[in-house]
Image (cartoon, rainbow over all chains, first blue to last red):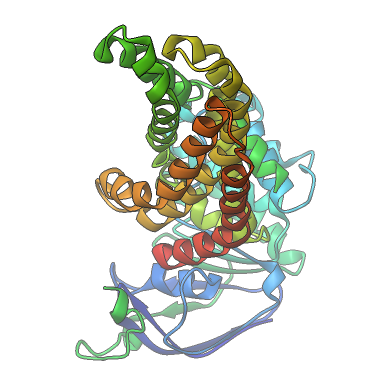
Length: 203
Length: 218
C-alpha cells in the first residue's frame, strides 16, 4: 500500500538522504533506525508531504495519510476533550467512545492542555491519531517522554491499528515490541557534497 | 473549516488569547489624542477621520504576529497542513477569526468615541460603514504578512514593516470616506474602493498565504 522508490530528500536545502526505496504492505509497520541527524524526521516529513522530495516517488492513498511530529499541536487553553474534538471535526469524523480509555486520558478529560505533564501531552497527541481515522501513519519518535506503561498502551493501540489493515512508518530508538522489519537509514546518507537542493533560491 | 474558526475564537476568548486587546489599544489611542492635540475642537474634528483610521491600523497590527506564531510553535500548523482541510481555507478562517476579535469590536466601538474627537454628526454613519468595509482587509493582508514571517525570530517587527505599507490604500480611502461624509460630500467612490480592496484581498490572499506557509513549513 505504501511504495517508496529512489526517494531523495533535503533539510534546509542540504540533501540528507539519497535513493531510499521500500514497500510497506497493509497491516505492516516499518521501523526507521539510524543515529541522530541521519534524516529520519526529514524522511517522514517528505513522506507525509510537508516538504517536497528532491527526487523519487512516494505512492500511497493520499487521503489516508497522517503525520505525528515531535510537537503534539496541543492547545494549552483547550481541555483534553476539546483538543480531540477539534481534530475529529477537521477530519470530518466523531470522537470514538473508547479513545480516552485507550490512551488512559479518562481522568484528564476536562483538564486544560496546558496543565498536562509532558507524558500526558504525548498521550493526548497520540490519541489524536486514533481520532482522525487515517490508515497510513508517519510517526516521529512517538514514545518520547512516555513511561513504560504508556509505551505499552500505545503499542497495543498500534497493534490494533495494524490488525485493521493500517500502516505505520515509525522513527524510534526504543523497542516497541512490534513484529516489524527495521530499516537502517545510515547507508542512504547523501554524500556531503551532493547538490540539488530545490530551495536554494529561498535561502 | 468552521471548526478552526470556532477553535480560534474560543482560544481568543480564554485567558491569554488577547481578545479585546486590540479594542483596548484603540480606545487608549483615541482617548490620548485630544490630550496631545489640545482642546481646539475645530482642529480635532478635522483630524478625527485620520486618527480613527490610524488607530484601527495599529490596533489590527498589534495581534497579527499571534495569528500563526502560536500554531507554529506547538506544531498544530504542520498537522493542519497535512490534514484534509484546504490550507487556503485555513488561512481564510484565520483572517476571519482575527477580524472578529479585533476589527469587529473596534468598528462597533468607534461611533461611541466620535464625540471625544468632535467628529461631525453627519460622519458617524460613514465612520461605521468605512470601518466595516475596510477592517476585514486589514486582517486579511495582515494574515498574509503573518504567514510570510512565521517562524522568524523577532518576526513581529519585520511583519509591521511589511504590512503597514500594504495598509496604505485602505487607510487613504477609509479616512477619505469619513472626511467626505463629514464635509457633506458624496463618499460613495471611496467606500466602493475600500470594499474593492477588501473583496480583492479575500479573493486572492488566502492562496498567497497558503503558498508562503507551505514554504515556511518545509
